[in-house]
Image 1 (tube, rainbow, N blue to C red):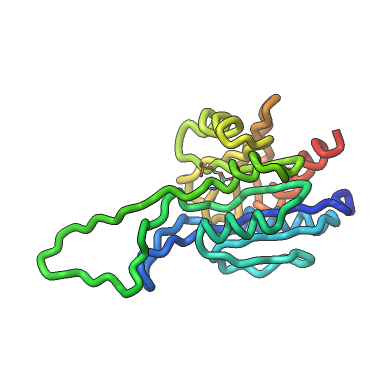
Image 2 (image 1 turned 90 degrees about the vertical axis):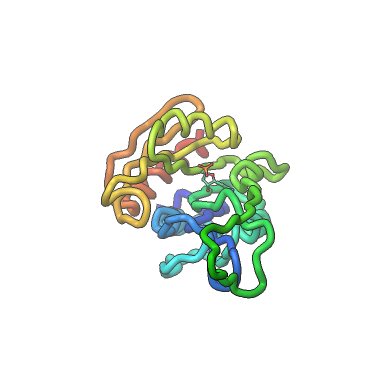
Length: 218
Ligand code: C5P
């Protein structure tokens, strides 16, 4: 099955870490398993796959070219450096905010200090920027990890982010979503929704790519 031969697919995966000081960071709970499974499945189908990964403990899938990044800003730059592409799949859990001014030395607690204020600034939205760029891939796919009102949030993201597909999953359920091997994904296209059979992230990655392929061929 080499159905994606000749196509370039860029996948972002894992969390981003936003440094507070040299020993602390703000990060998202993401193992990178979903994005890595997608990159592996796309490579098996013959695509030229560029994986941009945040800090994760996963081996690079066979046939995949990988760039490691740490922060959202680095991920943004690496994704844009990997374009143009036919498909962009943003499966990373990107931090929405970063410390405005990371400290260059470890921040020490002072006696009597009961609270501290950390000033955060908004990170650029990689998915929205890719979708709005003049090298927009033919298909732009995002993920939505939500704890509630999953469908409403996912459908809203189709338009706010300019994506063609949002793959939504509910997080906060034991054994599913973050860090787990299994997941439940509901795919939201502009013209309808489809629930994939729940299962291993590797199987979901293949099911997702079947539908991506269908759209590319349409
Ligand atoms: O807005 P939210 O983070 O829920 O949207 C999730 C989707 O947007 C994911 O596909 C994620 O990779 C992408 N995203 C991004 N850049 C950000 C925030 C989210 O690409 N700064």
